[in-house]
Structure formats: structure tokens, C-alpha cells
Length: 287
Image (cartoon, rainbow, N blue to C red; front, side, top):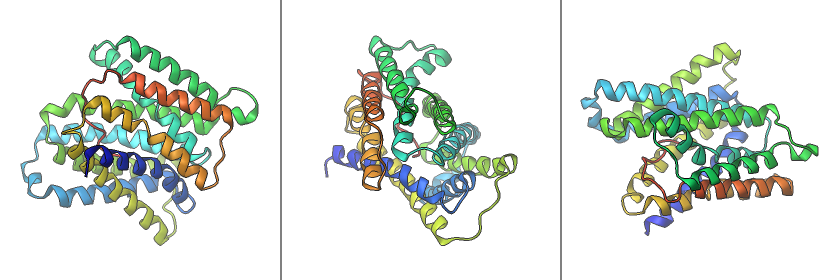
């Protein structure tokens, strides 16, 4: 199988996770579900990593905890947002992390972005304004949209931390730690948010297990495919993630206004321009 088609499958899985998470929130609170999802994903990666975990270093643990914190913040807030906004809208807003990463790298790591990155950020920002509240006849952010925008900052921070630690840690070992850390942080945050453990429902476990398995498969597929697919081509393929989310959401009955769809298209274009010409970075470790 061609690696490009494997990456297309990855974007399809990514796109489908938004609606799957939103459906699971019918039976579970957001933080409990995210915590359970990443606990199960950590268990799957633990089995896959095997004896490599015996060589765990302090750097692996330190990096995994910090990356895990950004995962908990990013996916926790994103999941809270999914309680009140459409899954396809959430996917388009989340896609803002791609053009945002080079800007944050400039601020944090001193790596100035290229001219096309600024164009991509501008397009994505305009797209966000079109997505924000068009069904109300004007521009304005709802709580769900605002917290999803905040989640984008955390997800962008996750990518930057992965880039920061990539050369000094083992990918398999740090993935186990970060997933486990994200789970612990989400469970700890439940008390602060006043969220209780939901009543037992096998559907919660089924959805969390399916998403945990998807996270592990996505990471393995990316690690394999991106050995032979250029970063530029990978970015073009990854831009399909919110598109798949919109298609899946539409099949499930979601209907976004035309202005929101135009805004989503502008964000996707901003994703592409924000990474063109792409600088090779480590892939996203979870999704």
C-alpha cells in the first residue's frame, strides 16, 4: 500500500474522532472521558513498547509529563467545547494549530516564520471570524468556540514541545508517559471542575477504547508513512482532517451555514500556506 494512502486514512480517522467524542459525551463528562481515552491509549502503547520501557530515562519522563500536560489542556478544553458546538466546527477551529505553530516557535524558540506563514495566519484568522457565530447573524464567539480556540494554543504548544524534545528522547517511551500523564491530569481536573464519575455504561468504555486504539494506530501509521513521504506532501494530506470531519458531520445530520463552510475552507488554505514550504517536524503523537 502506498504511504500517501495510509496518511489519507489517518486524516479520515482524525476527522471521525470529533463526532465520536461528541457522541460519547451523551453518557460521560468531558474530563472523565478524555482521561479514560488516554489511559486506554497508554495501555495499548505500553504493550507495543514492550521491553523498551526498561530503558526509560529521566528525560523521557520529564518530556512526557510536560507534553502530557499540553495534551490534557488541549483535548480537555476541546472536548468541553464539543458539548455546545458542532463537531465539524470544532475540527475547523482546531485546524488553526497548523499556521499558529510557526508563530509560537518564533516567540518561544526564536525561529522566524516565512512570509507565506503570515499569509496563512491571516487567512485562517479571517476564516475563524466567518466560523464564529454566523448562525446568529453576526460575528461573536460562543463559550464553546472560545474554549476550543484556547485548546488550539495548548495543541500548538504540544507540537512545539515535541519538536523541542524529539532528539533527546525515545519516541515509544515518551509516548507512553505523555498519554499516561494526560490521563492523570484530566482525572485530577475533574474535582476542580466539579465533574463526577459517570454511572457505568458500556458505551463509554467502547468509545474510549476505540479512540484509544485509533490514537495508537495513527501514531504508528504516521511514523511508518512519513519515512518516505515529504513533509510538504504530508501537510497537504493532513489538511483534509477538518474536511473529513465536515463530511462525517454532515452525514450525521450536522448543517453548517455557508459562511462557516467558507471560513473552514479559508482555515484549510491557511493550514497549507502555513506549512509551505514545510519544515520537517515530528508528527503529532496523539489524536
